Length: 73
Figure 1 (cartoon, one colour):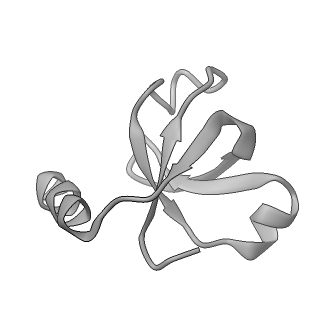
Figure 2 (tube, rainbow, N blue to C red; figure 1 turned 90 degrees about the vertical axis):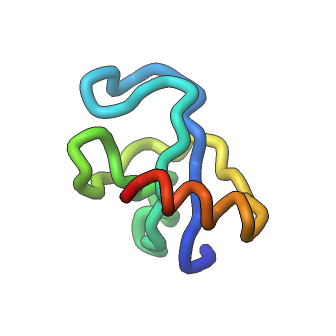
């Protein structure tokens, strides 16, 4: 996983913590990946593990990534 990676929530399952069709920052976690999980920063602004099947990983061009991080501040 790159330093900054993003994942799009594509399935329902944790409606309190995740919004469908929302882009989340994914954090590197090799152990989680071994267990088919992904670590994302969710609606609580904290990072948690979720089933990887709820997400599609998204590669963003550098200029788009810059805009995403700027929008979060």
